[in-house]
Image (tube, rainbow, N blue to C red; front, side, top):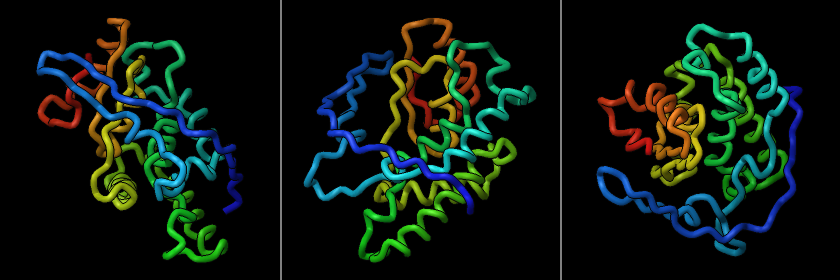
Length: 209
């Protein structure tokens, strides 16, 4: 492949509890600790993002987005530190998909693990391309991998400071249930215009608060 890997250092898991939001439809309570952290000795393996990512391809496509205007959500309203859509897609995917080393029964050697890891890298490299933003075939392949790693029950995604809406938009694109909020009413309006209003006929986006 020729892709360069980035292997982040492991950090001790943070002990998180619950996020609770009061909305017009009632109270939402999400167990963030169960979703986002893994305790040592709980039998859960590593996610792909904890081991390696094809950063060269992700960075290239993220930079390319700056020169694409037609169909780019940033054209709705310029937001400070708006996250590149390609990077959001890649990070969400890699945060949910298991690294092959988590399944020694399927990939018993380092060689087989690396071969499977490279397959996932190729999928990420296809996923981050702007031309594949709405490619049904690529998106379905990604959703299958997510469901496979999450026991066919992916966790909801919470972005408590959604800003320009990049993370909620890409989580929705990956078929995930999303909760988003922000203290700034301009950010709320941008995110509503970007993801909640167009998807008002679906139940994927519950609320932007």
